[in-house]
Image (cartoon, rainbow, N blue to C red; front, side, top):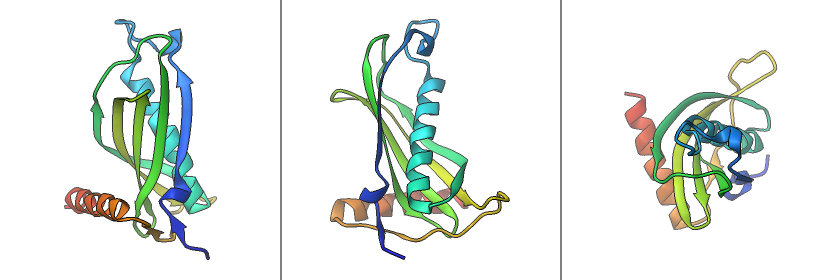
Length: 145
């Protein structure tokens, strides 16, 4: 198997806030943002795993600013860390230069019978990626306690 890097897993989705995305305050619904992040994270996880993946958990969800109807947004996702069968993915939503939301999702790679299947270790290519991976390892160790 070829080495797989964090950059190889990057996925990006662009959109614009529509009327059906709004809550009663005419702001983009937080649940809709979570769904968009989960979908982008799933694609990143599948890119790395080469098989189907199921969402296991979401961590460190933070909403930093609001989106209104017509606002453009971008959802970026990358696999940062892998376990034996798990993939730890960062997701970030931005509107232009404005950070809107971030979250970490954990996926489990599964076979056609939905049994966990091993994934290849992900490799870093820069000191920044190594630092990001170390922070993810710390979160993983705290979650597993």
